[in-house]
Length: 242
Image (cartoon, rainbow, N blue to C red; front, side, top):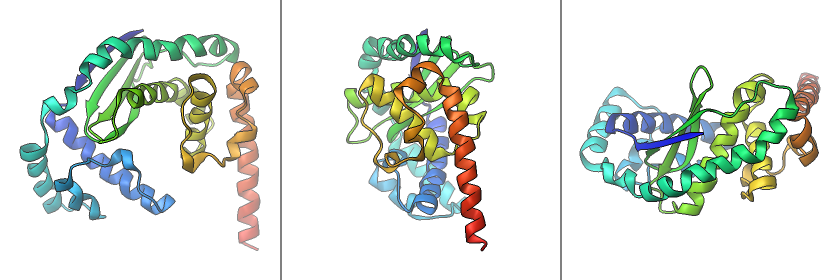
């Protein structure tokens, strides 16, 4: 697996900031809470996130602030040495651990040939992938006051697990966000010692995504989970409608 990394450009980092605003307010509306990893951890930008709607005037104002007073490429290179030395083996650990299971799944899950890591502002991470699935993209937010090398290792492993199962399992079976995160958390905890995300611990997924399921037929377990989940959702809808 080929690994590369670079900091986001100013324009890329700004675009991510706008996306982060969207996710910030989506989480407030859907979960009644903010999610720390999407914050910029720069007090000067806080009023932008206080506004639910980003008007053109607000965007223009905070774009100028971000470009002139916030963005500094050096901020996004503080973990270059760590990523260079430890990033490849940390990600390879995921590939080596899960490859034997993937071979049993009889699915389209495959290990990407290349992982590109981009660093930006904030905390936590997110993922994307190329259309062909051969390249996985990890956006690593590293300017949080809580950012450290151990946390970075966990984030990039977590995002690689997402990349592996997202298209062939999560999207295939239309798994909602909270269940998707729980599946990845269970895999991360069982095989890599990751801490669980508190909002997702009490989950419908818990009785389906077991160690046995992961090692033998994760796609089948997710398919069964979503069949039962949809039945439950339909029953709840009928009860609400009387």
